Length: 228
Image (cartoon, rainbow, N blue to C red; front, side):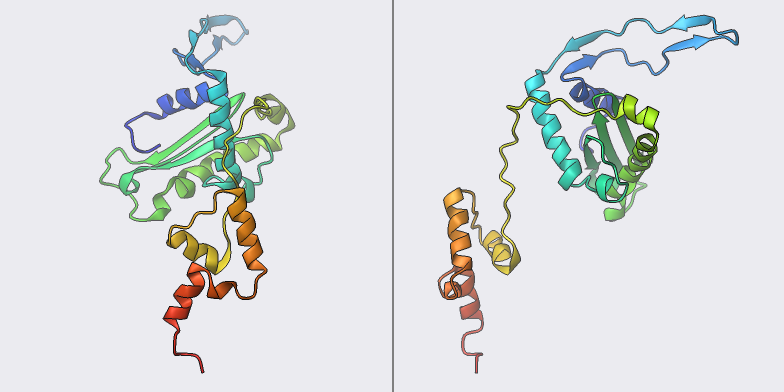
């Protein structure tokens, strides 16, 4: 988000397709019907044209990834700041030079899209205060918090996702911690395999590990001759 010239309506259509497991709605209408003072229907929304453009297997994968973005990624403030407990998938977006801030979120029954920016791209923030998580996310967070606080609205719009049990993002949730983890990432050492992770844990129990690891050798060279 933030790289292509798309309107907010177009973005809502795209994320709505994810929410409906790949079913795209061509004619998007916000008004369902118009009634007069006596309740007589003056106009009724015609049947919407829909078509399957993405398989539900792919949209399940996308939803699983975008749920992670909410639970532990750039959208985590939806949980920590706004206290949302419902199933939610979404993504922040920041245009180049902070000209636009975006946040998109959805459930199977609701899509929330927020874009903050001026019509003139020369008017923008100059730092991270103009990012999607700083500008757009709070608007969506406040709106969804209000919905979740109302039992009727919560039951209608904040329903759980039903994702295939075979869906997996296949991304190991492992990241080395501490100084050694930082320098291993800095020097390009990646602990991707289970054997490498076990070896890392074994070395952590070895009091002489600092003399053998890349990080240990780095510090030995750095402080060589400085010990008293």
